[in-house]
Image (cartoon, rainbow, N blue to C red; front, side, top):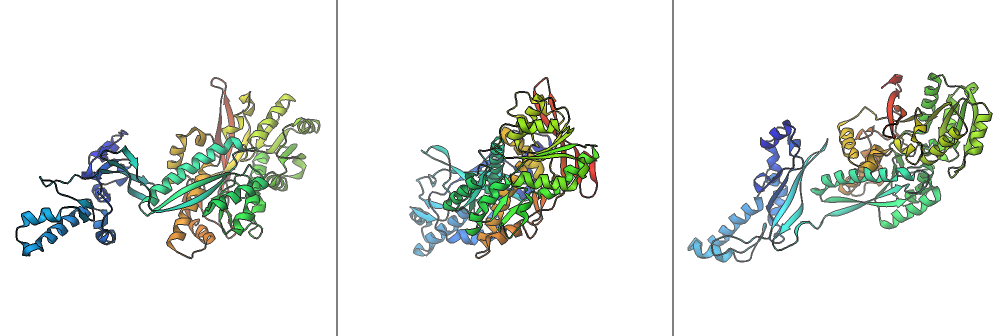
Length: 523
């Protein structure tokens, strides 16, 4: 009653208690068990590993398994029983202390002191957790020991599953690498809360795929050598392609959080590959529709020639009226000098630009256009659709008015989405990143698929991922894998950049949306 009253009144102060509130059964008295989230409690810790006779029986009983002091109650009855078998139950006052001398019970080893007390060995330090859509968990993952080092982590004795994470920490989208890592840590943190009481913990093994196919292949081999169950990533499509050959050959499923090249839809060429973002075959047509609706003509299509850039640019051109295309110019993703490209755009008299780039090259393109006096409209796609585009610009105002699309949540924002957004906002790296919700979803899908495979020996890893990814309630929306590992396009944010001259800060806001039913609508 006290905890729920505090929750209703909006109190956010930490709450601590003792063994009177310990155990999952304490949640039975709550109207809203989620109010217990974060409460930390203590309870006496077993003096040594229990005998184990009682533990299995209690765990199998719904009432016993959620109680407190159950093993202690068992030991008290058993100790009296043992004493009663001495001399037919005569002189219990002498025989109970005799039994209670180094008694190996299920709650620990007990020796009665002269006053009938036991010394004990410390306390479990436990925390109540509420995980949206998954429920409540009571995890005793820390302990305090008399004469020890205070509160310490409990040594993990269960199973540990390794999840590989291909992070493009170097290369053209390195600015977004910290955001991907931050999102993955939020995901594994929640997965470990859920898995703790089920005897499973997850560990993420990171490898730099560098937004490059060759580098990603090396990173994939490192993950294989590390013994990962599944792999998350990469972000760049070319990197995912480079990693897939090794991962699929090793029977390791791969779930990308940002690779959108249409080529990855070929399940024969890229077996065991899944992604939680739609193919750019959809996004190209959406950008074309947006620019047509905005009356853009004489469009210069400036794009990288990698899998992501070429795929999206070709999809855009295929869906745009050919008379509206002013020119199409491709460039290597490692390009740093855009003088000649922008000169071509200017000389051809193009009045709008649709660029398919990442943050670093996109920023350089915009800066070069400004230096050559370009004043037309600038459009882009998900490679630049976040504040990080302006991170390294000396004049951040240059992004003011730039319009860029990115996939929107399928089915709207869910409870998981709101919770992730709140947790992500607490991390500057996550808050300023792109595809962070998607990175969160990819990690959680792989974690739950691994748990499913552990619980069902012999289940194929790819089938476990496919089954897990059906109507998956994710932070980026509802996810359902098709036979080729793709997900359908639910909608897109049509965002616009704005610059605040007073604070010299940049904002990217979804001013419009697109969905298959309503087309373009105001947000």
